[in-house]
Length: 306
Image (cartoon, rainbow, N blue to C red; front, top):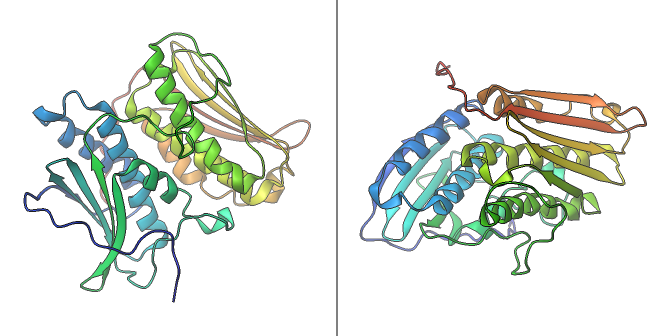
């Protein structure tokens, strides 16, 4: 018997349930395109015009659950988005009915599952079940504004750095989401990464923030897996032209992770916005990862279905 902190239960029955969108990602490269499909479909609903918080949470949960299905499940992976009276029900299924979702609490970060605790905090309800030989991992997202949790509690976010520009509410929310990632990795790192953010952070679009959070999480996970670091500095700089995220550690350097797993996904998230990813050794030891994308939006070219 496998014990998991992700509850095994079906969603509560809903009488007014309609499938709004469905997709079938076959590789990580499909996720950004499908995420934008979800954004276009949900954002086009008249009743969602003023719910940026709910849409942002939906897109982030979509990325986490769909990527987990691709990484740890068995194809084919299918994603269904249904509307319910209070918001949306997201269902990600795969053929690995024998592999329950296991959050990465109290175990090696290399085993994955780092995004499941985040989904549990952001969703109104969540769980998994088996139906017709397929595993279904689901989350209920309420379409109402909420405060973004930094560490699962109600404590106000710390002021590690004072960004300039943008509205205070937007800065607090975006920084709280970034801190949620750094705080979430503190347990596996053995310390809390130092965070510094400058520039109009509040003006970042939800699409860029979604990728930024995923890149930061993967970078910190790589440090936890391979670097044997004693400290990590996270710097986010937003200028008129660029958005640059730098993650520096004082560990053993690139030799500790010859393949440096996760880079393909990080490059995909940079290329989609017309940006770049660079990983270099630090002169004094350790590794510096730089993810940079232009501030001005680019129009991505459709990707052929492989």
